[in-house]
Image (cartoon, rainbow, N blue to C red; front, side, top):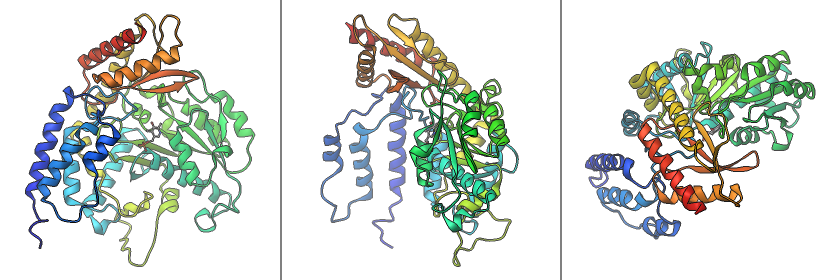
Length: 468
Ligand SMILES: *Cc1c(COP(=O)(O)O)cnc(C)c1O
């Protein structure tokens, strides 16, 4: 064995560096500060020809990435919907890496296979979904959408007498896919990979908060014949609003359509008693896609594909080969439920999270973020020239900034750029119903009221500077 490679002390060094990073996160500039050229210069160079001391590699890694890191694990990162990583989940993730288990099959890691079964049951319980759902542990909600929609494609075609896994899509009966006009790009991307083009989608108009108009769904369902899939959304990426999913499911099921729900972060409303009404009826859908790496604050990569009936889920994804020792019915075959073969044991941090927080802790994490989003909206909306454009029903706040005689779109873009450069917090931009907005997503476990107040002050300062 090569003693040089077998240097385990390097793990201690990584732990020290990680801890010092995490301790510094609350006070560091939230956005990245390096230029691409500076990062290339620090991290690049010609292909290394010779070995280097592992400790030196780790030191260099920590040093040269630093200015290019974004403090997404910190309390004042409000970009996208990212969540952070609760320390216990990071620790569990380290163990998952150290153990380097493969989640593909029981024989490759009995512990991981059993943990996946256990966490599947816990998740279904937490989200109040039907018992007996199958769960695939995938990279993110994008692949969770792919998985749920692959199961949908299988089942609606099976009912039409067509085996899509054997016979393909090219001569199959036509499958119609109905989406809300505010469908997330990732669901569209997943549909594209499954053979459904963007121009083939039947789009149902949305209301002022981005919710699919259930009153217009019957017309869309009438306009299509044969196998159909309806793709609903809980948790619009801009407003946080959820489609009237119970009504959508009833209408779609009456027409024999499969309902898939994209709930990357919004599905967690189902785990909080006072928010559950926003997703009323969601448990009657056929498949759900969500993330643990967003609102549950486990490290990337952690998406969850859940299907009410395991049969189409497995039929759409499972693989067989003579050398794959799939085991008997007692043993979980992880690769039956995810569009991957070899796969990181990504269940481990999620297992640790659920053990550490429990049902109550998870609900309070989501609840607290929603209260903080309302606080942010309250701090901003009273101010001259500042408007909150959405109903703050979850963790999302959309803000528009104006100045005397200027175009609010320009002013808003200017404020966003100033906030990102100033570094107290980080928020991104989006176009919402034709208007430039600042998009603030509160999804980090460590955010406090003080973080919200400091961030609101920084944002308002940037607005004053922008219009001065
Ligand atoms: C983030 C998001 C996705 C994509 O999830 P990833 O985890 O980035 O793959 C899909 N749908 C919605 C509504 C999202 O917010």
